[in-house]
Image (cartoon, rainbow over all chains, first blue to last red; front, side, top):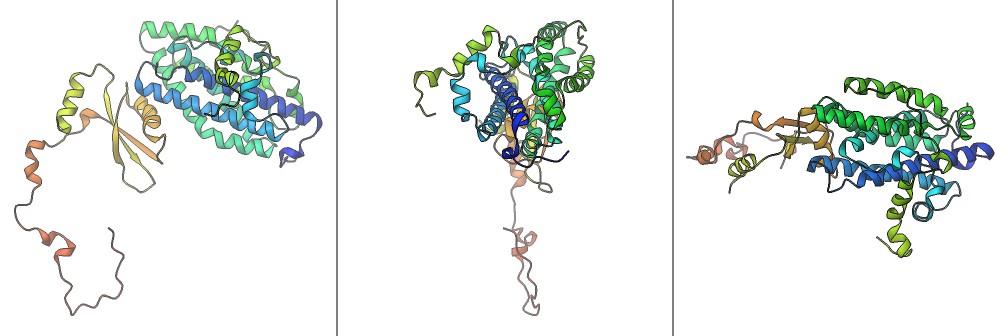
Length: 261
Length: 112
């Protein structure tokens, strides 16, 4: 398959499919970045607080990069996309909008999410859409750290005390079905796979499952095989939790759209 | 309160995780330089947390973390051992004059 050197070279269904993919990725990043930032000042230990807050900034930076790419494809500018859309216009998966709950849940979510992001970025970086492949390659260093962070915490807490193991097992049961929804199939799948831009979601899901399984097993945590994905996010069906998050994220902008900060 | 007293005070009131001292290297081949300390459960966690604590703004290619207890330090009470009792300028290059009979042809650049 020939490489697609510029965004301008995208046409028709392929262009629409790339726009769909970028919205999914950008919205996941913005929303999880916002959720992770809710730990700023509150994490169990100062050092952990700084690391989690930094990762939140990384994710929001990734969102910005994808929104800019969308803008280059004729969509509204990044601020308009982040601060003026309604919750139902977001294309994020259910995993990222869930409330932060306790540290065990947030760490488990961060691990499952960043393992998925690593799988996707690795695939995109060898895809045919050159600007996206280049961006994916650039972001992989940060993602490598995020995955190290998630893995380290999951192993420590999974094998820590009886209480920490129980909390992690509970977190896994809650987060896993929503993490599966990161790979909700969409109409864009086939087009993106045909163009060698991004593999089908079911293929990415299998790669993700084989990436997270050994870590969870090593942590002594059990994935219930009957868990099914909590889909709907990719077509704008979200829980109330996302509406509340969007309201908080857009609060300043909604009071004063011309505010600069 | 000097540095060792401070460290003792920190340890005494410390209800947190063990302390690791952190050293960073800003470019390959450069020395690792002490930049601070961090609380962590174990060495791997210390590296993980030190990365965000100490490399958020500055360039870094490598980090070392060392358990605080692995460091043996001299005592400030004995800092007179570092003082020079007599002229030791013969240990310095500037303590020597170049004899007139020696012709300096290719002067290497001096490091400041």
